[in-house]
Image 1 (cartoon, each protein chain N blue to C red):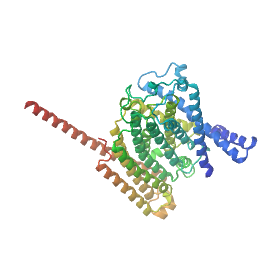
Image 2: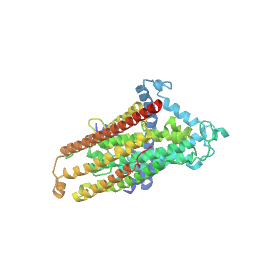
Image 3: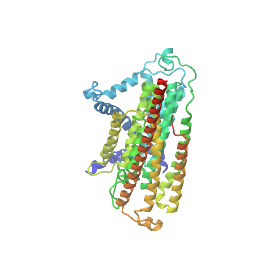
Image 4: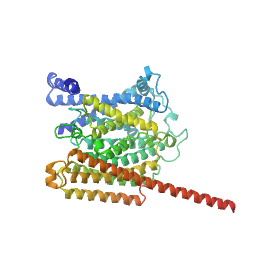
Length: 417
Length: 118
């Protein structure tokens, strides 16, 4: 039982020990080799899951839309990703004559590297993590914005109007939705008191003196906003304005084909899966869970979150660009900011540790009571915001209807005269 | 501590190498038969007219400014969030005031119409 639970750790420790002792490298070189091996394993995992996810997503979305999906290559179309890979490798790749060659050719590499670099901090099981940075969450957010640079490079370097317009849109969307993401990760950091992803998981794990409440139960609003802005950050449907075919062809990757296009695709999927992993870690307790081994738990949770992504993609229509910006700046950002302030005050006024209560005042409560208060505050903020948004929308509709009626009666008057 | 971040460097180098090799392999495998029509800029079969660097909406610029405001707020708030348990109530009220000033700035931008997209 213990061997199964710690399977990944035992294997990684064994390999690391083998390289350190048996092969007779100097300590520094051995350390580098171990790191390099871990990096290659993580990248291979990400690339393989990208291949698998393209197949699963096409199948799931097909089912939602009452189609069959890929079913020709191999049994149930299982070899479809392989066939796609062969096609991508052997497809002719054109670089427009007017393109800025360096920028144009580097952009796919940059987006793929930044997407893969996120996996350096995702914890898969106790002790099985690329590196436990003390600024883990911050690192994820920082490296995540690297894709903005790559997209601007692609749009600018292509020397194509559609590509440039797509890049403008994308950059505006990605930087915009980073704000609610930051604010809501901040609430998790506040509750945990640490930016390390391992500490965040430990805070949600059942242990001595720790009730182990998943953050989604005490912070449902940040979880919801994180999910929405995560989808927008990875530019997945319904926020895929950057490749609105009817308006700007394929957006920033209009001019790309072959392997370079595949790298953009890889970046997109790897980023989306990373968001699913980070969501599971921040809000669903990461690898913590009963009975099953930890690495199974984290994969199950990430798969569940990714299934929600696919579900939304199969169900919702694409939003308009003004709706997209309004949702972010006029709804998510103010709501998250107010929520952040209230969470801060609740944590100070209802501390769970005796030391904090004695030093700074406030009413000493148990962690469960604090979680309940946080939950109540979250839900209150959510419902008040929704009510305000509904009222604003109703007023907007009424004003529009009045304008139409006025125009109609004016038209009638001119027709009579 | 230093080795923690060393892994990030190793990861970036490894990712760049592996992806570079993929691009190189594709470059060796694929056919290469360029002609002027293929290499022209894509625009639905038309010749492109005028400069590619078109004017862009000023709203993009204003949104970027608002974004910078909030991004800096986040940078300042992350250390506060980590040290939160050790902060006295007075400091927390200060931070709250800071956030509320930002919220007021957002409302000002909103009233000015900077967030509208018409």
